[in-house]
Length: 340
Ligand SMILES: *[C@@H]1O[C@H](CO)[C@@H](O)[C@H](O)[C@H]1NC(C)=O
Ligand SMILES: *[C@@H]1O[C@H](CO)[C@@H](O)[C@H](O)[C@H]1NC(C)=O
Ligand SMILES: *[C@@H]1O[C@H](CO)[C@@H](O)[C@H](O)[C@H]1NC(C)=O
Ligand SMILES: *[C@@H]1O[C@H](CO)[C@@H](O)[C@H](O)[C@H]1NC(C)=O
Ligand SMILES: [Zn+2]
Image (cartoon, rainbow, N blue to C red; front, side, top):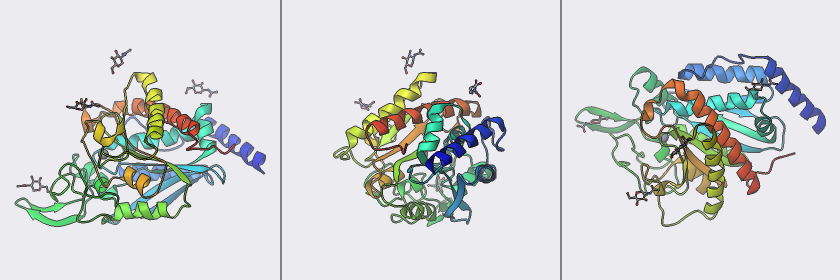
């Protein structure tokens, strides 16, 4: 049975290689939510039964929050990726979708192995309302669009920073998290926002130990940020192990364009400093996923959030290289055990 399945799968890869233009996305420009969702559905049509699109739940403004799953066979461990939880960080969903495209279409045996050995999940746009708002109204928007119930002299203030609202050491530390009118507002209480509840509900539906890596894609700064976000007084039990895995990413991501990724606990890296209630800490601290990280993509501040679209392919290449290195390191640490 296994051999038959494997052969089937490899012929699928061969089929894909001769079928160019698998989908409607091109990674030479930034795409809006409808285009990303249409691409997701086309992947499902094209690669069924290996690709499935789920609706995890709905945003405050009732947009679906979709997750794409790739699974070549049963019994694989899973790797979970999310992007565009911060609406302004367009490069994150551009790169995560490009990476999935690479996984499904590459003739590189490293990537073909990753496709075969693991189940892959991608939530391309964690914050659809904010994402649409950045495309249609205000390119600089970061939060979701739920009213906070608070007004200032300018009028009502909207939105919670979804990556501060998770219920793990919520509100312990962080920049401007208490101001409902600011970009980093952590919400009135932990776990109040429909977008992160949809994610949590989806992840809670899987057996323990199925998801082994959790990667939250963000920009910018070129960092691999590890738990814990709220303190550098204490470190996770397997912090050294996570550091070796992050190093695997950084070393592989450096090769092609000499892009340097720094790695370590959020509070050590002089980025935005401490952060609490973010997704990686929830994944690690509440869900016991043994490697969880926030990956801050390009650049290191020149363009910042407004990274030109002509860099998408390069960032995707260095991220893809980095993922190959990260997974090799995670296998060495036996955090990941590939099903052979
Ligand atoms: C594999 O991909 C590389 C780079 O994308 C390309 O140059 C090469 O021709 C491809 N090989 C096959 C057998 O398709
Ligand atoms: C009120 O909040 C908005 C964001 O909702 C902000 O842009 C504005 O600067 C704030 N105004 C004052 C007077 O604080
Ligand atoms: C690579 O980047 C480092 C700093 O990040 C720099 O010192 C070095 O000269 C660069 N190497 C090349 C070949 O550009
Ligand atoms: C962060 O900044 C502090 C003080 O500005 C400095 O001592 C420290 O070396 C910096 N850490 C890193 C990782 O750059
Ligand atoms: Zn971010």
